[in-house]
Image 1 (tube, rainbow, N blue to C red):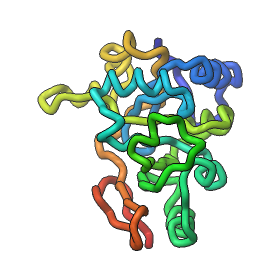
Image 2 (image 1 turned 90 degrees about the vertical axis):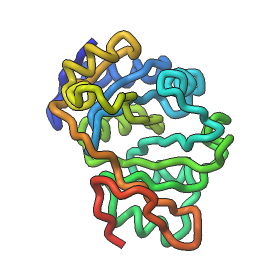
Image 3 (image 1 turned 60 degrees about the vertical axis):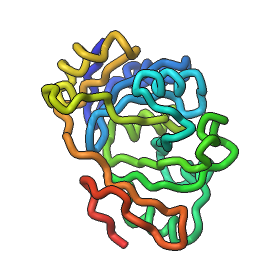
Image 4 (image 1 turned 180 degrees about the horizontal axis):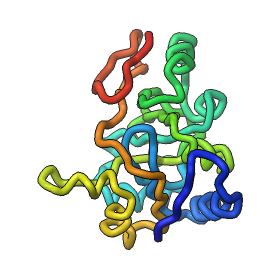
Length: 203
């Protein structure tokens, strides 16, 4: 099912519907400031396991990522030293994934790797949903084959056609992008860019 949402002035009932779906353990496809993504309530292990199966992810080998509404929320689920906090404050919201050590507030499925990817997209739709949910949103890129039409990653109607039966809702936030976020590992003594994507890190 496709639900049209806008950068602002959305019907509160539509937003509440999305939040209720996440609280009930549902899966959602939504726009970010990079690409369309698939996500669920970040504290509901069964929903996270559904996404891992859909993506073919082994959480013991792959880092999982969450979207947080603000830096205060990030500090609940990830350990930040002063340098990491300042770096994130300079660059968020924006097209970055910061890898940090997770806290015990995350479900057991995250603790297999001890690390967690942190996203705070510059995308009003998902920011508002995260604020209303008052919890992290587990997030992952959409599955895609290299030889497949890129429309299935960028066009919400085509995304709904391909993935609509696998998730509970697809949010139409307009055309999406094709470039992923810049990934910054902050678990060592110095931040290291492990993947250069859309974001240009301000150090």
